[in-house]
Image 1 (spheres, rainbow, N blue to C red):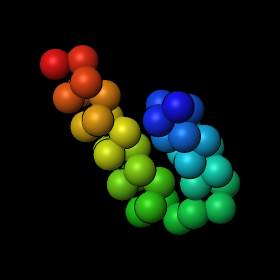
Image 2: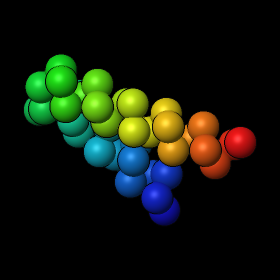
Image 3: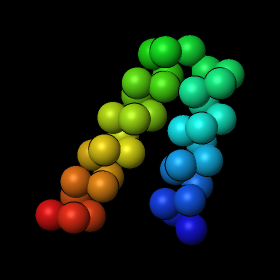
Length: 38
C-alpha cells in the first residue's frame, strides 16, 4: 500500500508539482527503497 501511494504521489506530482517537489519526492522514494532493500 505504501509503495502504491508513493508511486501515485510521484505520478501526480510530476504533473502538477514543481520540479523541486518532484525531485524531493523521487529522492525520498529512492531513500525509502534503498533502506527497505538494504
